[in-house]
Length: 320
Ligand code: NCD
Image (cartoon, rainbow, N blue to C red; front, top):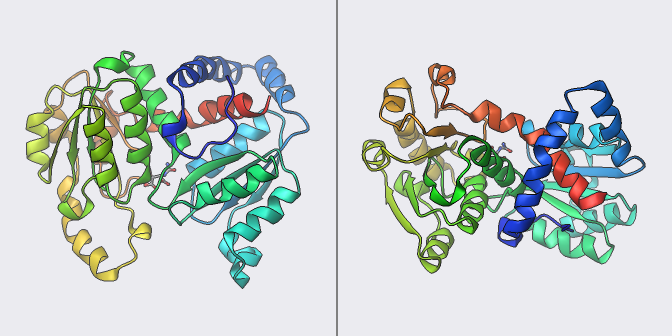
């Protein structure tokens, strides 16, 4: 089973995800030895990945770059599309993608600040038969992060059907939560708790989706309440306020006043189940005390580490 474009997680088949997740540990293991690395390097030789980043990135950009290079691909990186390309002269995204796709890279990886930009770009790139991967579109989706998050849950907890998940922080502008919720619902997660200030509460499309799937959810703006409700929950997924996606200065100031309320420290961790895992797509800014890092339930660095083999498995699936 192969996938052509990666734009939103609703489009992924559970069977395809399960197959991809079987490949990830094999890739990770191969990365551990010189012979394994040699084998990997031959897999996508002569292919070229072109990246176009219109927003900052550390993990996504570097892990895509390394993933491609570990598979023997060449990479053309555009790290600062706003600053150095003709976009700075006012060129539209559509024209930029048309031109880049005409050069026939084997895949384009796009991160853009506009919600819906990846779908618009994919319409153009697919006419030219160039696959496209959405590496984050505004407050829309971040599907490869969603796969990494789901893989981390799958690796640590296993039984996806019985999961109960708390999502907290910026659920309105954060794109990773949307990608993850759509993925989790494919595996029958029975219950969600959303904890966020009212201004950053979970978007109506997610609530509608959960209602349509008959999945229970509750929301609160109180961390204490969430800790009470979620004492037995398996996954705590925390997120940063996406200040760069909140354009209005007044709104930014109002949010800055409440964001510290969702700070997690070791006292909060004591109230979570001993079997729970604590996740965060990173970067963390005001959300989780570094004291929590020593707790074996803190999985956010493990989560970002999975970014490399998950993205390698994805490139292999799409391009080999
Ligand atoms: C996330 C993003 O860009 O949406 N970062 C990432 O890719 N791991 C989350 C964030 O920036 O807060």
